[in-house]
Image (cartoon, rainbow, N blue to C red; front, side, top):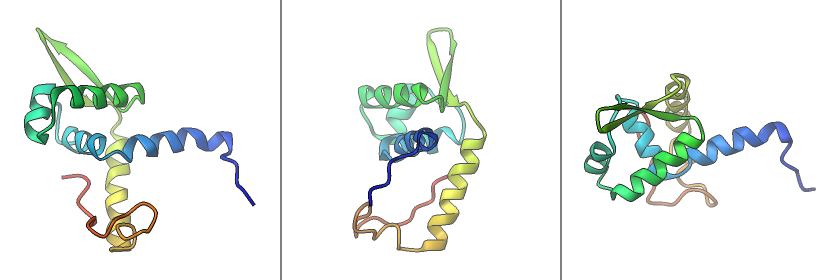
Length: 119
C-alpha cells in the first residue's frame, strides 16, 4: 500500500531535504557559530564561491538564513534560533542510534559515521 505524502507533511519534507545536503549542512553548522561572509565560508569549508553562493541562496529561499549588508559586504546568519535546537536534537538521535543511521542501506554508506552536527 503506497502512502501519499499528506499535504501537512510537505513543509517538513522540504525542510529535511534542505538539511540533507552535505554542503548546506556544513554551511548551517558553520553559521551556528556566528555570522559569516561568503569569502569566510569558502575559505573555512574549502568550497568554491559559486558553490557556497548557490547553497546560501537555497537556504535563504527556505527561510533558514538571511544576510545583512555592511558597506560592500554581506554577512550571513541563521534566521531562527530553533534551527540550533533541531541540529542539536539530530546530534542526540545520531548518538543514540550509534551506527544504525550511518549504515542504513538506503541513506547511509559504510564510510559515513555519526558526526557532531553543532560545534
